[in-house]
Length: 459
Image 1 (cartoon, rainbow, N blue to C red):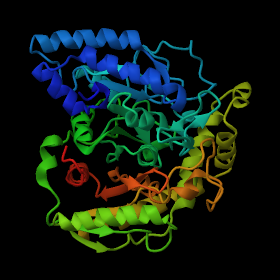
Image 2 (image 1 turned 180 degrees about the vertical axis):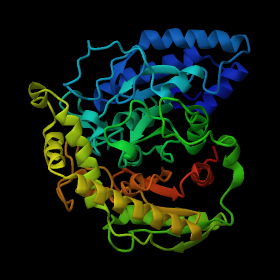
Image 3 (image 1 turned 60 degrees about the horizontal axis):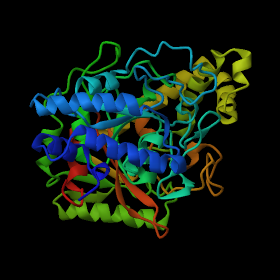
Image 4 (image 1 turned 180 degrees about the horizontal axis):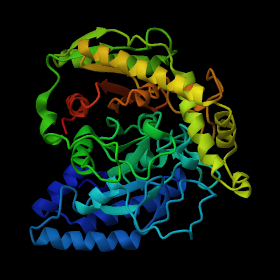
């Protein structure tokens, strides 16, 4: 019999419904898995086994009565430690946040929706300080590692969530993505990750990185992500920037397939990105598979130059504002890399910020036009596989910042488009490779549908 920790959320719910096993049995299997693996990968910064067992027992009784409270009743879920989870300190990976500060009595919107649907919260997953970079290490939680090779990074900043899902330490996790922070670790760890259209999943408290920041699901496959989106995408009054409610159900859209879809395959953004051969070959196979499934695939590149300088102005300015709010003694506790970009961000002028915003608006318009011709854009998620843990950038990267090796991710935070990564193979060392699917704003269901069509076992 398959260990229960290996099952997807959809499979768990089906098992609860049939009576094959209970939420308590599933949770115990997951907690045993957490105990077995967390010391190696450092995916969780906090585990609440007692609280989770209490919630699982309540869920078991609801299922026994045939009265589940929602779509994920009894499913184990973890939450990145940037998002408030009632009853748990939200330290944001920082020594500047007082664990006793509390009162820790509020859920983030996505957490609240999951709780309303009966989710069982295991605990909080690790993040670099305030989620500032594309790997997961920092002065508070230490180094989080790749489940496929603990010598390697799990990516970031939602690295703890990606590692947890990859290892069976709960099938669902909530991550955040301001420049790739869901997609990068999902690709490095071999799981599915979705950055929804900006605002589709409400965010509160607002991110210091402004409208670059998204909340999204990290799961085993697209079907579980669609299930999770049907829960967490409900509007919340605390996020004033959210769109109207989603029309229809994400799960109902999964079966549509890709026949007839127009897909632009850009292996290297028009030659501007150096991509590892194993990554290029794996994403090429995804393009071929889409064509086999009936999509009209052609090699085509989005017509933009790398917007990294404008992204840095926006990102570093957010860091500068964040650190400026700290007392002088607290600034001494900050991750040196974060302090460095904050110092740079504090030097930008209002005109610099407005110019960067203009670059962003032009980029969004460019991609809007691109998607008049193409339904989907296919790229690698990251141009390489996971490198040594504890580094912001590998030694062979073209720069020392995390943005130097993530050129496929941060542009689509600037444009606020939905973008998903799905596992598409491994390199010769057995490290996972991710392929990225991008669609026009508000076409989240299309991204999930295409990713589901590419799921090898048809889940």
